[in-house]
Length: 76
Image 1 (cartoon, rainbow, N blue to C red):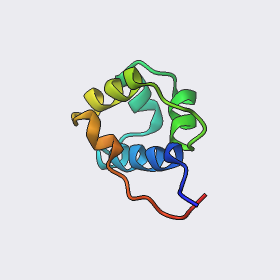
Image 2: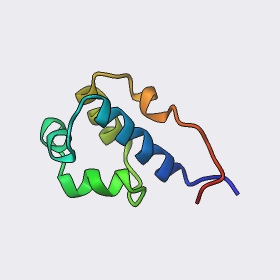
Image 3: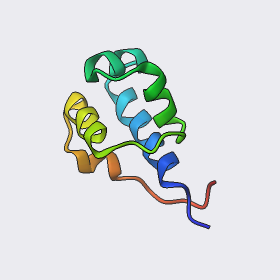
Image 4: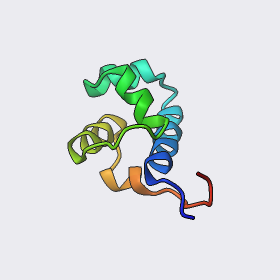
């Protein structure tokens, strides 16, 4: 069974956030989103909207498509 894309997205967001050396709090502040929301996205519990994908990409200084560059695995 294919992995949950919400979880894959969350893992990719964690990777990009950590490349900046940022905590969830810093990413939330810089992107004008709640820290609890960022945490939920990173855990794959939130179905993030396109608007918020674009906000996060802008904050991280990447194209929105960078957030969708994840490898699909058989993890659940």
